Image (cartoon, rainbow, N blue to C red; front, side, top):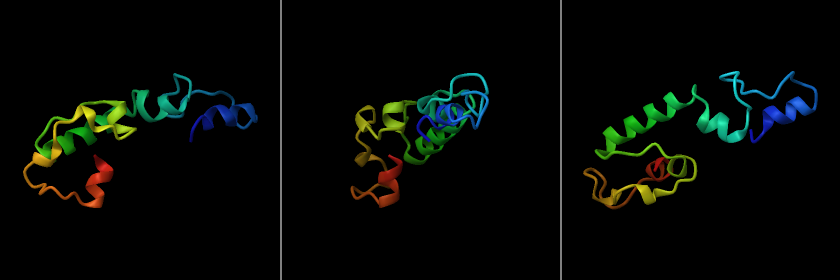
Length: 94
């Protein structure tokens, strides 16, 4: 999906290169998966659910959510219910 909107525009398959969701800003990859105001509620809800589940506050950070950089998280091995060994689905989420 990286710059797909822009590529479709250059090929003449769409009339413009704006975001398909908000129809306001340029449809770049980072806009479509992070910056778009219509995608932000998804990130907020996801982080809220994970924060409640883990009992810690998870910051709204593209470094964490998109790249998996856990530097901004406290030591999650001390979270109740996580006994040191993480299951494969937990590693992907965090």
